[in-house]
Structure formats: C-alpha cells, structure tokens
Amino acid sequence: MLNKKPVKLLALPAIVWMGALFVLPMLLIAALSFLKRGTYGQVVYEFTLNNYIRIWDPLYGQIFWDTLVVAVLTTLLSILSGYPLAYYISRLEPSKQKIWLLLVMIPFWINFLVRSYAWVIILRSQGVINTMLQSMGIISEPLPLLYNSGSVLLGMVYTLVPFMVLPIYVSLEQMDRRKLEAAYDLGATPWKAFWHVTLPMTKTGVVTGSILVFVSSIGMFVVPDVMGGAKSALIGNVIQNQFLSARDWPFGSALSIVLMLLSMLLILLYFRATKASESKEGAV
Amino acid sequence: MKTIIHLDTIEKQFAGNVVVPPLSLSIEEGEFLTLLGPSGCGKTTLLRMIAGFEEQTSGEIYLDEKLLSHIPPYQRDMNMVFQQYALFPHMTVEQNILFGLKMKKVSTAEQKKRLEEVLQYVQLTELRSRTPKQLSGGQQQRVAIARAIINNPRVLLLDEPLGALDYQLRKSLQLELKNLQKNLGITFIYVTHDQEEAMAMSDRIAVMNKGRIEQIASPAEIYNTPQTLFVATFIGENNIFRDGGTITAVRPEKIKLYQRGEQTDKHKKTGRITDVVFLGNLRKLYIRLDSRDMTVMAHQYAGDGLDWQVDNHVAIGWAQTDEVILPC
Image (cartoon, rainbow over all chains, first blue to last red; front, side, top):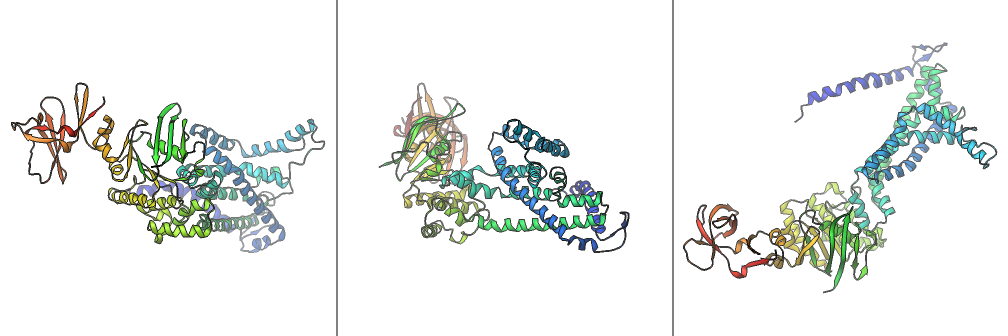
C-alpha cells in the first residue's frame, strides 16, 4: 500500500500555487464587486449592490447575449471542423500521427497576438486575399472580410480548434477498434457504424473539447479586439475596458463574477444534457 | 453434405510476409469446424478473411457458391463472436442484441419477437436493461452470442470466444455452445488454440501450423491417426521414436510396462523409471531408456493393480496396431 502522507506532501506545491494565484484572486474579485468606485477610479471600501444592478442595463444584456452566441457558434464550428481532423489523424500510421499532432500544436508556440495580426494582414482590404482576387480580376472592390462577426468567429475557431482536436483524438485513440468491426459484422455501413458506435463512444472527447473551447471563447477579448473592430465588443472586451480604461474595478469585477456564474451554469446544463442522452443514445 | 463455404487457394500476405500460404478448404453446411493451432499459426487471419475484415492477397471465397471476395463485412450473411466480445459499452444488453436487426431495418414487431426468443434462449431476460459493464464475463459472452445468432446467420464465426473465461466456466460453456450449434443447425467456424476445447466440440478439426492446414479430420481421427509430426505432438501427448528413416508415434496410454526378465516378444525397450506424477485418475510414469538418450511417458491407471515406483527397472512395449508411422 502507498503511504498517504508523502503523496499529500507532493500535492502541496500545486495546492499552494492554486491557492495563491487562483483562489485568492477570485475571492478578491468577488469582494471587489461589492465595493464602490471613487471619483478618480480608486476603490472605495463601502458595501454596495449597485455594480450588479447596473448589469441589468439592456446594453450589457445584449453584450452577454452576443458573447454567448459567439461562444456557442465557436464551439459548434470547432466540433464540426475538429472532429474530422481528429478522426483523420487517428487513422494514420503512428509515425504520421505524431507529425500531424505536432502541426496541430505548433501555433501555440507563436504568440497569440502575432497570430491574430497575421489574420488581419490576410483579410484586410489591402490584404493578401483581396489583393490577389483583385489582381486576378475576380473582384473590383475589396471584399469586407475583416471587422465583422464572421471574422471574429473565424479567429475564435482558428485559435481554439486545437483544444477540440486533442481531446477528441485521445478518445478516438482509446476506442477499441473491434467495436467498429462488430458494428460492420452486424450489418452497419461505415457511416452507420460511425453514427451509432464511434460517435457515442468518443462523446467524452467531444464534451471535454466543447467545455475547453466554450470557456475559452466566452472570456476571449484579443480576437474580437483585433479582428472584430469597434463594432463587435464582447463581454471580455467590456471587462478589459473596465479594468484598463474606465478604471472601474468594482464594476469589472461584478461583470467577471456574473460571466463566471453564467459559464458554470451553462456547463452544468450541458453536462446534464449529455448525461441524459446517454441512456437514449444506444436506442439506435 | 452440401458445401456452404469454399476457400479456393486463398493466400494472405502482410507487407510481403506470407501469413497464410495458398490453401483451399471446404466447409459443410451445419458442421462445427474448428481451426486449431498455436498462436501465430494464421487461424485468426483465416477467420477474419472469411468475415471480410481482411482481404486475401489472392484466391477466392465462396458462400453458397456465390463469390464473396470484395463484398464488405456488413453485406456478408454471417456473424462473428469476437474475442473479448466487443460489446457496445454505451448500449444495454437489449440494444446490443437488437443492433443487427436495426441495421437491417427488420420490422419492430419482428425485432421484438426475436429478441424475446433469443433472450430466453441465452437466459438473459432478467439482465436485458443492464450495460455490459454490469455483467460478468460469462454473461457478456452470452450477450455476444445472442447478438450474433438473433440475425439467423448462415455461418457463425467464433474467435476464441471462451478465451477470457476461467477453467470451470469454459468447461460448461463448451457443452452449451455445442448444444446451441446442434439445436440451431448453424454452421460454426470456431478458432481456438485449446485442443481440449476443439476435441470436445468439433465435428471436424483443421490443425494449422505456420499458415498451413496440417490435417483436417474428425477429433478421433486427428487423435488416433495423426498424419504429420506436428499434429502428433500438438494434439495430446505422444512418444516419438526415431529409428533411422522412420518416425513412430505411440500414445502414452498405449505403452505397456513389464518387469524386466518377464520374457515376452512384445518387449521393445528397457529403461528405468525416473519420475511418477500423480494426477488423480492416473499416474504419469517417465521412463529413461537404457539404449538411448530419450524419456518415454506411460500412463498407469488407478485400479489396474500395478504399482510402479521410481527407480524400478522396466521393459516397455506396445501393440503394432497402436503405433502410427509418420512421414519425415
């Protein structure tokens, strides 16, 4: 038997780390959200619920809603583009799999901001695509490829799709291929076997990937800032502004807390929904 | 007897390595045929080619005289019971069993009727809404069989279906499987490395070695008149005597022991008993021959009134009819 004491000690650095850098700041933010802002942007230590009341302004409701829509669409598009890629990789020879997984991860090595600006260079009016299409005479006026919700979505999916590919790849790898043969043996065409066996058996990967992508996209502010222009502010941008420009830390904190609670609620609902479908799933 | 499956000089190579050299085999309708051999002998590859999971490098496969080559597994009228069963973990017992019928779009009424029949047949009615994880190995095995036979396949392929179970359960399921096959009248092609299992169930056994079929015959024939040295030594125990150009095999139970000096012309060799192993209903005697570097094994049955001990000097012999001459 493993002695429990040393194991506990080994966990200590991580516990201290998480406590100091995650739990403590969270508590600070929570506390901050109930305080007042002074005239010059300083924090006044007086209790108030005003920050939360302010959020009920339809302006913020709209931004929250837009953020959710973008996050849900990002997650869906990531599943639709990430699953086939993960499937393709899992069917390659092991040596080729390594190369492809590396290619999926390489973008992480390049600064996120740099990658976002690279997209700007590709998509803007005098960008790579527009100049090419114009010189080929296909279009006369540059296409509005940048600074709209489409470009935000593109940027989000581009940034977050690896978080979808990797967990799905892992669950595809772990799946026993004989289950698939059993499905063929019982008369399932490849497509039916995928739908009734592979997909339900790799659901864990899709759920994990969805949560990673959803949570990351809900708080994203760099992509909408760089690729969305002024029009498409998401809640992440509003929070960033409250802290950095408006110097209203208490209100920024309140927005953060609401955003966090909202994501937790949605993830909970998502878990419930996927759990509930588990019993029905097999009903071919 | 009508041929149901015919393999016509089929060959399998993996990346240039010959796994199954060209072989032909006819399987008769309603028979229980076992492919028996050590691991790596090509028996599973042969089964997977019949099922359609592997494509043969050359040669053709016929089912009911119809060419089966290049037809995908989901269009072949046979079903397989997989090693480790390969049940669908996200489905209940019932959903697992119904999978084949749903894929073939059999009417709901017919599905229901056949489900009840099969559930009763394999005694799983009470466990129908459990998932595979909640079942014992033996129960999972029943689900795997039920999932296959509900489709009324022309042929049932079984890939070491009892391999994952413990000895006692294996024994009782051997009998059950044999009875199932008799009652359903379905052709069984059964792959195993366990000769006891093969002996207990099969109508015919194809003994395989290095991708080749060494001998195909009834269990009794295989045991009593092996045609090759491999079959003689792989099936049961055998004493192999090499005399110049001939190889003679004599089963241990056919070896008779005599006191030395007991003069009979049956005596062929003399030796000394080196070990006596007690096995309950019989004792195995190991006799070191005087004439050459060889140990002969003989059986002494309980109640035959003889009591041989270690270090007894003995003479051994056997009847001419009990020896099998093998090709070199």
